[in-house]
Image 1: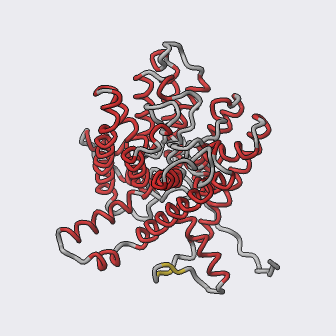
Image 2: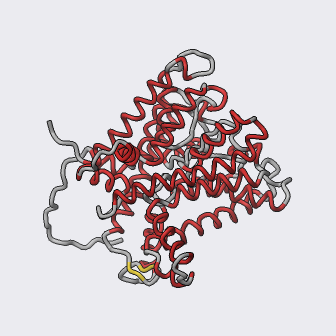
Image 3: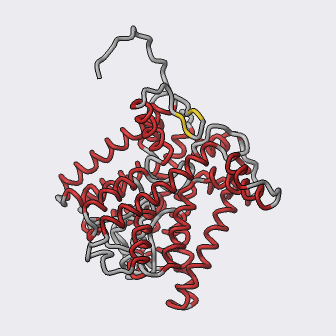
Length: 449
């Protein structure tokens, strides 16, 4: 039997988890009605959970039993941290030694360039996840326990905290997501904190924790500590901040006089709702505003943010902030007739440019194809269809109302799109292609651009 490559194991690991989850969700005990769920709906729910997307054909709060919700929560946690990270954590617990093969899988799953320090990083990821999710549980509980009581209030807090951190966007407090809490600052800023932390990426976490220790324990100045941050962290933090505030400003501007969204809110409420929309599109899926009530301008901005997504080695989807940044600055360098891309007085490796271009182009091709297929089979409006597919590919989970009414063909299209969005179209291509072949050296010939 041919030995599986690391990428193939990761792809199959996600697929196996989805299939196992779908079987559990078909069981009568998984639904509140006590009846078996149609397999296509169970498969859709398992896929949206493992792929941390959040598009749902059945309302999570009202359709699924506590058992079903627990299965969904487990799938979300596995999907957010990654099958390999979770498996490695289990090996820690039972005292098994981490083999070289496991280390290679961890490296591939986190998208890292080197193997040193992987085991320590996984431990920190698991501990950090528990701490951050725990903070989220406590903050959510201050709102949900008084509203729902201790039992369901704590369960809803745990579910929402894990879902927000893993950028899944599924909740069990309301049938309209978080729209009822649009003016609640604790719910809004807790969810945004968790979404942003999950989307920054675990490499940035490690760097920021090291910086925090330098400032607090070693008394190193803030300025010097910032200068010592790794290049990757500086880029991620800068671009993340820019996208959040640019998105907030544009959505605030486009929705300011929209009576269906924020026109009648006080100024601070308008700002908070606009910021939440900007944050949740990258790529969480909770909503405090009805997506089908947004202006077309805000919907377009939201789709752009969905496509970009979060940062590498995190829980978010999309083409990632680093890819977006490389292409933007590549265009800028061409316009300025420069030979290389420079950021923070550092030169970006030229080899990353074609990779970034390939990621964006392939994702665009998948997006356009899924839009075309969904238009053919489900006949929705062009804006609603584009929004649905962008949300599925970016593993976001926001919808303008199409998801519950999808046909079987439409569900299959979105299932495939969500899976590709989580594992990455390029990973899929690499996983099932032949080993890399050396390209033949032909004479160079000029072309006119």
